[in-house]
Length: 280
Image (cartoon, rainbow, N blue to C red; front, side):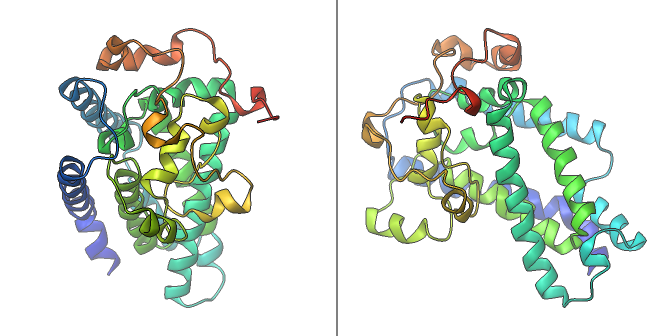
């Protein structure tokens, strides 16, 4: 099983990515939640272009993929699940949940530390919100994220199967909850008990700092409720809210070369959590 996973990991991830992307892109055309304000051609070129850049850089910096790290950890007996005797199925479930918790905590961290917020704010600088926004991250943040993920994999001894499942599910849910799709409100209320929905995560992309610093979950919605960072709806409603951050409102900032320079432009601003207006 592990050999099959190792040999087919790239094919599995690419198939899932392009399949989910196509479904969400068509859904956005058929049932959009909001009217997009900016050029879709420019945004998609830049947002998908950064995916290509990140893929190349990640492979150069980390010759071993996370699943390969999990296989090495299993061979050498590193991590909790390679020491404690529990069923493989339970270990897979626990590892997927713990990896998701790690992603939540990492997300809070990049909002709390001004230097890290400078990297992460490129994701928030998109002034529209659709399926491509879920892939819009600065290369330096991707490197940091992969390093943290690998450390967690080694620490908990995550099975290789769990890592593949987590990677596929995370990519799928990131595209789903960043998509500009309209869900019936009753269905949204039920879904957000089990998964982060587009309406739930869109609040996190509000231009208002106290809304940006909420709903940090990418996949499982439970962590926001557990740690008190959950916000049900934006103050101005989903049609009335502004997407993005104050510093990068000019449409010219949507171009790829401008995006890459954003961590080095201006001040951190009011968005880091430690500068948040706690009265709101």
